[in-house]
Image (cartoon, rainbow, N blue to C red):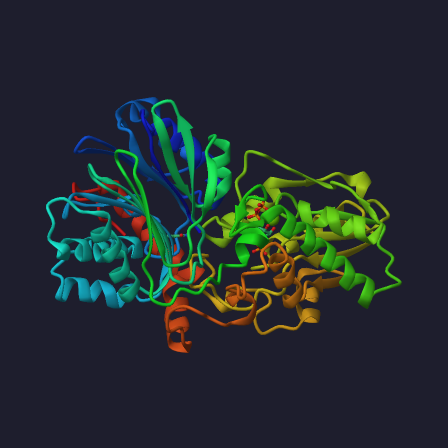
Length: 507
Ligand SMILES: O=P(O)(O)OC[C@H]1O[C@H](OP(=O)(O)OP(=O)(O)O)[C@H](O)[C@@H]1O
Ligand SMILES: NC(=O)CC[C@H](N)C(=O)O
Ligand SMILES: [Mg+2]
C-alpha cells in the first residue's frame, strides 16, 4: 500500500495536499512527494521520510498552483532510494506526473517492451515509472495537441490491456487536469469527493475516504474497478468505465490492517468490519473453548483495538489497555528490515504490569505476519507477571506472499507458512493460539456490502486473481525482495547515495 491524493481547487492546493498526506501517513512512511501545477509549470518536492520531514516551509512556498497530486510511499518494488519517491514525471506528452498505489506483476516484461517497441527510457527500478510510461505512450498515440476526456480514457483502457497486477493511480496532465483510475479487479482502493465553494466545486481523489472527510470534502463514491475519473483544470468532472471485464475483488487486508478505521472503503465501514471480526473471533472461542479461563482481553495497539474491544464484549470478559503505545513511533510492520521492526516493537509498546500480574490474559492482534510483534509482546506479558498468555488473531494465518502492494514477498519470512497452528503457537511462546477462520473474515467484511462477491484473500489462501502468478514468479520475487537481498542492496545504495549525480537514478 501507499497513499495517493489529487486535488483540483480554486486556490493553491499545496496545504490541502500536505494535510491529506498526513492523514494517509499510515499507508507509507518511507517517502513523500507533492507536485503542483500552475498554468503550464510544474513544481515538485519529494524525498525519503515522513510528510512532516520532507516538506519544510521553503518547499511549501514553492508548491504553487490550483491543482496537484501527492504520494506517501511504502516500497514494494525497486529500491527505497529517494529517486523512486513519487510522483514520477515524464515530459512527453504534455508533461505527466503520476502517483501509484499497488504493485505491477508484469513490470519487467513491460519495461523491456517499453524500451524496444515504444522507444522509451526507464531510469529507475520502480514499477510505477513503468506504469507512467505505458500511460504516456498510449496517450501520445492519440496524437492530440489538446487531449479530450475520451483520449485520456482510451489511454487508460490501453493501460488496462497491457498492465497486470494492482494499481490505484492518480495522474496530472500539465495544464489540463487530474486523472485517477483503478485496476480492473479494484484490488487497491481509491475514492473521490467534492466540496462546494463560492467559486464552484472543488474535487479530490484519495486512497481513503478519511482524507476527504478530514479536509471537508464530501465522499461521492469509490471508483469502480477499471473505472477512471478525469477532472479538468477548470472543474469539469468526467468518468468512464475503461476495462472490458471489470470484477471487483478488493484486498481484504485493507480491512484487517492497512486502512484507517474511520474510512469507508467500497461502501464498507472499516471500523464496523473490525468490530465484526472481533465478534466472530469471540464466537469461535465460545465454540471451541467454552470453558476458557480468560481473565482479561488486552489489545496490541493500535490496529487491533477495535476488534479486541468487541471480542471482550461478546465474551463478557474485561477489556483492558495493558500496553501503552509511544505515539511518536510509526507502524512497525511497514518498516523496511527485520532488525528495525523488532527493535521498534519494544520501543513502541510498554506493559502496565498491574493489568498482567497473576492473570490469564488473552492478547488480541489484527494479524500475525512475520510474528515479530507477537513474539516480543508475549515475552513482555510474561515479564509483567501474566500467569497464562493466550493469543488471538482477528485475521487467519498469513501463509502466502503478497504481490499486489504489500511488501510480503517471501513465504519463508511468514511465520505461518508451512506450519501448523500448534507450531506457530510454540514458536511465539503462547499458551494457546486462536486464528480467525477465513470464511468468518470474509463475512465480517461482506456484511458491509453484500454486492462484493469476492475479495483478494491471496495472503490467506494463495489464490492470485490478477496477473499470471505461478511458482516461478513467486520464487523469483522471493529471491529479489527477501529481507536479506533488500538489506544488501540498501547498504550498497547508502554508500553510493553520498554521490548523487544530476540525473538522480541510484538504486
Ligand atoms: O507479525 P508482524 O510481522 O509483527 O505483523 C503484524 C503486526 O504489525 C502490525 O502492527 P504495526 O505496528 O505495524 O501497526 P499498528 O500500530 O497500526 O498496529 C499489525 O497491526 C500487527 O500488530
Ligand atoms: N505500496 C505501494 O503501493 C508501492 C507502490 C510502488 N510499487 C512502489 O514501490 O513505489
Ligand atoms: Mg499492530
